Image 1 (cartoon, rainbow, N blue to C red):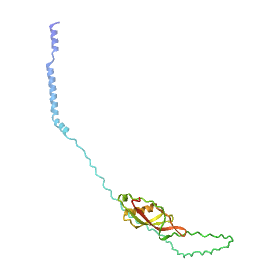
Image 2: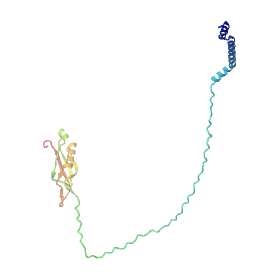
Image 3: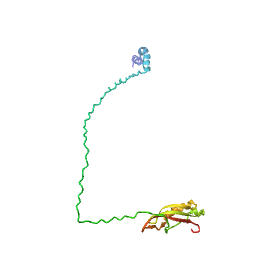
Length: 216
């Protein structure tokens, strides 16, 4: 290969410096123009970003008050009371009954007289009656306190011989012995009833009740 051809090849491989410098200058100019154009707008964008968003508030007014309903006056209707005539009737006389007519009858049945029970009476005064049962128990408290004495009782005995009322006629000196004698005679003692005109009748009897420790 000749020397002339080699020189051409080497020259083609080196870059064109003038062209590169021209392109760089054009790019720098365009960037400077762009920065200059955007510079006044930068504060406006910042204000737009920093400013708060406005909130729209709508105030709803309440509806106007409704007028009160009109007051109606109700007048009562007159009530007609029917007139009822009052009729006075004369008093009625009771009917007159005819007198009963009786006819004689041949079949006459004699009516037996109704037996009349003898009237219940009490023998006057105080009598002595025989004893049918006279159990006696010494009170425990009186026995511990060594109490003794005799109680005189007046006992009303019915037709069956049972005491129906007891009255203390003479005390023994101890209320405990008096009470015990009255309760025991009224509860469990029996007598032979009094007889008047063949019938048993009530009668008062005098009954002594003795509480003696040696006999108990």
